[in-house]
Image (tube, rainbow, N blue to C red; front, side, top):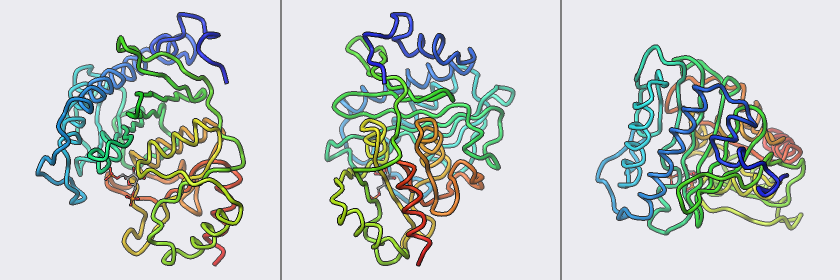
Length: 314
Ligand code: AFP
């Protein structure tokens, strides 16, 4: 892992890094820069918008907070501006939306992940996956040409991969994303665990065994309720495991395949980790609908494999 002082000056900004280090094609670089610009507005909105309810519901029947609606609008405006996006799909709409049909990319995104934590002032995030072409349904996460997330915590971080490693940037005081760490890696073994959907511990075969094995090994609990924050913890510490298996309430898990599981699976693989739904690599599960959900086991490779075998052993 390299820290910023050793990175040549022209490679320190997000744009410089995309251009010089990741050798990202120009149009994709422009698109990622536009997403980063949207993230700066969201970061600002989080600090300045009253955390009340918007009084509307999304396609899953969940109440949208003002910031969900605002973040969604900010991202849409930025995607609309550049004529690089043919279609997009996001958590707040139930259909794929067409923007510029002949444009080179399609984008999947969760504008504000962890929005139920806004009033508690915990970390929240945005997640993006980028595909070539205008089709989203029928694709697999492996076909993404880039995936990235933004973490709005005490500091705003931007983490991206265009297929050559995972790189982390910090939003500085003049509004520039500056390199913090290059080539984030996830080691094969986990010391931290992040157990989502614990209420389903006895409804998912083997989940109680998984959790008991973590306690027996005296692993460290780290769970915030925001996927972006919880999985970023794994990237940041270089090890760990996050689970959100199915249960009676969530027969296919809660997390959305297109804009939660898929982008994180791409990033985890790039960092040397893995992501599974319990039996299949998330990277190879086709997107069948915008609202498709998927169980998620993500993080250190050996631990992902061990948990999948415990979940399917019963
Ligand atoms: P919200 O965006 O409604 O807060 O949901 C967040 C989330 O989709 C994901 O970020 C978390 O990992 C997961 O839900 C947490 O779910 P539980 O609240 O059921 O633990």
